[in-house]
Each structure stands twice: as C-alpha cells, then as structure tokens.
Image: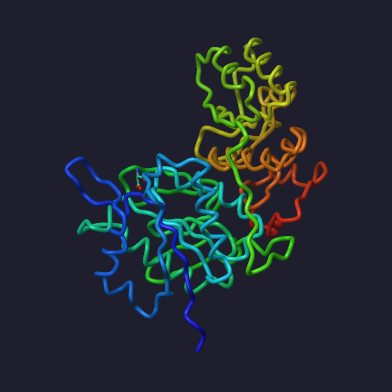
Length: 369
Ligand code: ASP
C-alpha cells in the first residue's frame, strides 16, 4: 500500500473561514480548523493527511500585497521537504494575482501548489467551501506526484494559476481561464487533462529545497485605456520611478495612435527604459501588436505584445523580471515568451527571433499552447 500523502495548508484568509458578526463577515483565528473538526469527511482516510498553518492576522485578500505573497512562499519553503503538496486557502478577490505571483516566485517548484477559497463561508448551511476544500485535497492527495505547478481549483475546474481571473462576485463558478483550457474537470469523477499539465522544469529541481524570489521592490503598474483618456494621465502613470506598466488595450492590442500627444508620452517612457506591455481588454484573445496598423504604431514606439496574458499574470511577471535585475531590453524579450505557461505565443511568431530561456523555466508542451 502506498503511504498516505501529506499536504501542508497555508490558510491566508478569505470568506471561506469567515464568521458572521454584527459588523459583517470577518476571519477569526482557529475558526476554520474548528469547523473542519466537526465535519467527519475531513478525517476520511481517502483524503491525504493535512496540517493547517494560519496567517496572523488572517486577511481579506483585498489587503494582500507582495509581502504577503512572500509570506505564503516562505511558509511553503519552510515545509517543502516534509510535504507532498501545498494548498493555499485564500480570499477570492486577489487569488489570481497571488497565483500568478507564486508561479514566478517559486522558481524550482517540483511539487504542486493549489489555491482555493469560496464564495460562501464554510459555516453557512449552503456553501461552496466544503466542496472546494475537499476536492482540492483529493486532487493533491491522488495526483501530487505528477503535478508541479501553481494551480487554482474552484467550483468544478482545475486551472493553471497564472491563467486565471476572478469573473463573478455571486456565482460559485467565480474563476475563468479565458485563454487556456482547464487542466482538469470535476463531475462524478475527477478528470485531469494530462496533456495540458506543465512538464518538469528545464533545471531538475530538488525535492527537499525550494528557491524563491521575493517580489515587491520593483515599481510596476497596470492601466486600462478608455476613449477620452488625457495623455497627461498616461504620463502620470508612466512617470519615474515606474519601471514597467501593463496597458489594457482595445481589441487585439489597439490604442488611440492617431493622438500624437498620446504617442509621444509612450515613446518618451519607453526611451527612458520603461517597459510597456499591451494586453487586451476583452477577456478572451491575444494582444498581438503586429496585426493592425495601430498596433504596429505601438510597436514602433517601443511597446511590446503581452499576447494572451491576463493583466494579473503580466503584472506579476513584470514584478518578477525586474526583481531578477534584468535590463529593460531583456525584460521586454522575456515578456513575450512563455516562462511558466502564462502565455501563448502566436504560431506565426513562435519561431521568429531568438529564444531567451531561463534555466528554471518550463518548456511548453508541444501542441498544448
Ligand atoms: N473579500 C474576500 C477576500 O477576497 C472575498 C472572498 O474570499 O471570496 O478575502
């Protein structure tokens, strides 16, 4: 008989373990563990063994910042050798940002890290918390040996973490992965699509040691274009000490390029070394600046395509690449390549230009992206 898997749970906060109080739902230390102790299913031998370590204080995820990403990463690192997989219980509001950040921070990851949360607290009669928690634990328990990426499980789908966005405040199906299929689906059975799972890292990582990269010292941001935008506003967004900005463009990477003042603000920023990355406002699709004339004009002033990255992933990636100390030229190049499955390079561009692989990145599975 194979040994029962051991899962380490980082409980960062979120609705899932909150308690109703006269002033609204709020997290309370020890309360989630107290509730779990009363549900016999969580002691079932079919589940992996697990321990929970809580954040102090527990957070509503809208209060999270890169320092909290580091705290999660550090809790995983300290327990890395002793456990087979890691579950991060997290508020839904910024879960996709944390998942994206961890996917870059945990450079040597060789074990699964899964984030989940819920829309309704576990203490409520009708909730999604029990299902999300139980199923996450089952996935980690059964499949930990074949999974080594940062994922999100929510409702009935398992996603690559850095492909997700929160898309609903009131549906149990709160997350989507608009540009990459779910890694798994849960119905009567739990089905993993093994063809989509990231293969092992280029550099063979150790199973007892984890390298993490601290994020947060870079000054990066995100900005949504809109008709009527005053160039002076964009100028403020791109002003020093900003190093990189994700611009949510119209359609396939379009912007008001006939506005000379807008273009000169962009050109001045990229000339100073600010990395400006275009992603698309529509939830689905890719910002490929080589398609339309307006896109090409953005390329001409130094903007780069972020293709089908979510804003969450593009932002986390900028934090990460600047943290590594790379030059703006290298950051630009790497923003257009997949490092850990966060983007799909359009096939016509895939072979063009030099590839700048990093020793710890994960090779794309042929045909998967
Ligand atoms: N505001 C909560 C949080 O993100 C929402 C949730 O967990 O669903 O922590």
